[in-house]
Image (cartoon, rainbow, N blue to C red; front, side):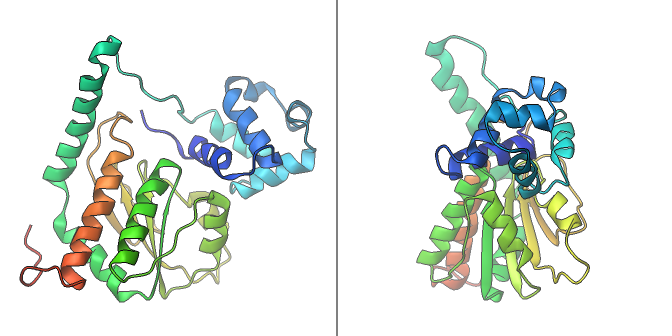
Length: 263
């Protein structure tokens, strides 16, 4: 099972909004009452969260929806419960390690180093580089940004989703944006709402699951996953580190010979 985009954004709001803020209160209530939300209209939700109807509407728009109704309909379709391994507590460390190690072994054996090197070339070529992830995926983004900074290549990231969206809207074609998304979903709703004159940045997506083909994504680094969430975010953390290591060898004086495209 993989978290859907909307539950991840709601979890992101819990982690990044100020304690007791309006948005945090709304996100907390929705996550705790997902099943009954289908029978709850916007007025009832406002009463139960002790906020105004306009605050609910604004919260939905900040997530990229036209209104609360659209948010509610999508949330009903989204998975959101983490997978728990069966068995006794005594066996849990070994079972969990085996599940994570198995996911990483697949990534190690099947990842395209040619694509990793191409991403490194893009990072080197673009003066302005941003790296974003959602919730757990943001840990991979922060790791890559930190490693690149130490390698002499500045890049930026934002933890809060609404800050990522606002930054995305101001980007231009001379900028590079790298997205970490386990499920392959990111700025889908926001991109559709952009004006026709928007000058899209170069977008790279590092993702698992089924091979996606979204028109607004320019380049994919696809990694293998099972239908389990247990390898998340370790696969993306591994790839963030691999990209940094490869970039260091190619451009920061760590290369042992000329970096070729041989696998």
